[in-house]
Amino acid sequence: MIEPVYNFTLPSIGGDMTLEGRLYHPPDLSKGLCGGSASLKGAILAHPYAPLGGCFDDHVVLSLANTMLSAGFIVGTFNFRGAGNSKGKTTWSGRAETEDYTTFIGFMMHYLHQLKQSDLRQSKPSDSAEAHELPGLRLLLGGYSYGSLVLARLPPVSAIVARFERALEGTASWETMLRASSFAHQTLQTLEDTSSQPASRGRNWKPEDATSDSPKRAKASPVVVGGEETEPMTRRHSRDSKRSADLVRVSAAGVARRILPRVRRSSDLGEHSRWNGEHGEHGGTATGHGMHLLVPVNVSYLIASPVVLPFTTLLCPPGPPSVALSVSKSSAANGTSGSLFLQHPTLAVFGTTDSFTSSRRLRSWAEKQAQLSKASSFRWRQVGGAGHFWTEDGAMRALQAEVADWLSVVL
Image (cartoon, rainbow, N blue to C red; front, side, top):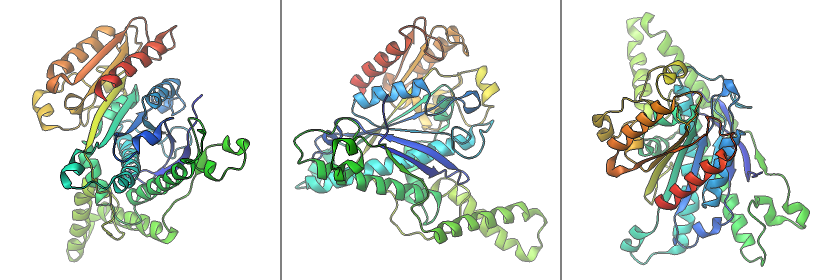
């Protein structure tokens, strides 16, 4: 069984709900941090529907994580609200879960960015041309079953990065980046401390290994981090500001004319913060120390056992485009959520005996995506005899093989 390096919590940018997260390191992490000679790769995997038992301990999620680790990815998994020990409840529309996924993308991007930034400082390119040629970051976003529905609702990664670039001190976005920076610092310190050791600690070394005095210590449990990085007063100010803004919006229709300008200012803040700051969070101090990426980011998508129409409308009512059969050429050209699978390298894998969506419907959906995709970036595979849960004899091995083969092509 694979073991995470970090077990931790993050505040979702959608309502400040506490989410559980895990971070896994590949056995050859140092190869992605060797003076800019290789791309640093990160992957995030989203789990199935929580009310049906879905969480980051799902066997399909763990198996895919293992495949990603073998391919050299830093892998992150998390529990949506209402799953595991994450706070809140699963939503019917899936919109709040999109904010949860966005939070973890911000965390992963900042973590990779901090590691790569240290790598770029060590490489010291002689000119800007060399810097431009340095490999960037690779980010793979994945979802299994219900996780694929949330995945399809995500905005472009560039919009997510821009949102975190404008994070205000004390907000959930700010706290997320602080946690990522803290972990990156621990990781870099451990790599530095262990680089002179003659023998490897093994695949899943942990930050405490740097000060380990015995083999037994080196096999200690993963680092568990809860609480928050930000000072309590700063975080409290952010939450209080959010509640105040919510109260103003609720009572706006009945307030007197003399305080309407005040309501308008609050409304303007809320509209401006939809993607540029915190969704529904106001207050805090803009410090200019948000996420500013120095290298390009190559994004790809993995969809395992996608859930498409008509089951989609039962589990996730129509809203922003989801994994459906209706993605048009115009939406694909605009690069909006729901069409990103057509703009970036994407693999969809499903079985011929899926219990939620018929084999014929899945094939029809996949063929249409492949036809609409830019430069044939959409690839799909159907595994004979495999069901939605991949428990049939040989099904999981087939799924992992298809993913590993695709990774060897897109990396």
